[in-house]
Image 1 (cartoon, helix red, strand yellow):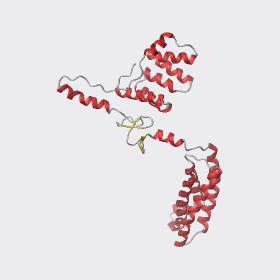
Image 2 (image 1 turned 90 degrees about the vertical axis):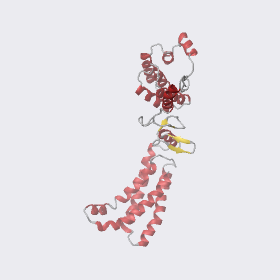
Image 3 (image 1 turned 60 degrees about the vertical axis):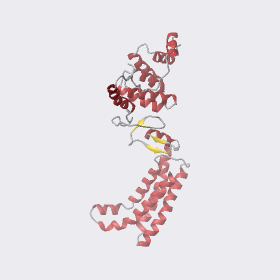
Image 4 (image 1 turned 90 degrees about the horizontal axis):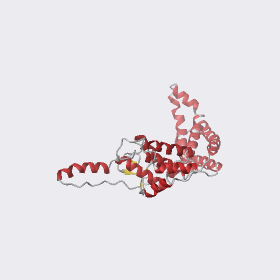
Length: 297
């Protein structure tokens, strides 16, 4: 069944534009969104087949399109190409004669009276702004992601110098800066944890004092955290990972929590006198973890 609803037509044009630009993941997401609302839309099935990579998935999508439109030219031609068969001449003729996709436009009806013009104006405005966030279908919006052109609500929009970008496109753009390997996470944990445990043990057990002690801890902690971050990053070959900074910080927290476990248990049983013993480790952990996180970014 051909798509006639204005919002779905707009989504179909977005999906075709993304597919033409090679953004297959974005196009696939929009096609599937259309099919959730209109499962019998053969245009969306054929478009989905065009952006899928697996031959079995492509075949299934073409066959679904043919169940709703048995003579649909694009589906017949797509199955023929998958099977390595020549496209029938009559199908090629239909494809050649078929006009290209057109952008959905809001047509202004011929107005004979002022009453009809007033009645049609709200409908035209509704068609023009009838967009919904692709992540929150219940939220109307007029914003679009500048990269994939999908509608996004203000909660999903991330402002950039060139416009608003959706979370998925932002994540894809950030992935270009991360080149770590799965083994790097194990190496980072094995390198940062022993050093963090040694530093935490020394801070908890041997560094006790007054105001000067806290000042010394504050300035020394930055150097210790930077050292842990640099050593860990050198061990993984200088590669960057999305979760590596958080992993190193978690190892540093464990390095303090394990030596301070007796104090923590004492607090749990009601002995609040040991809180002062944890002030220095807390300062160290805050400053050192921040420095290590910055080194691992």
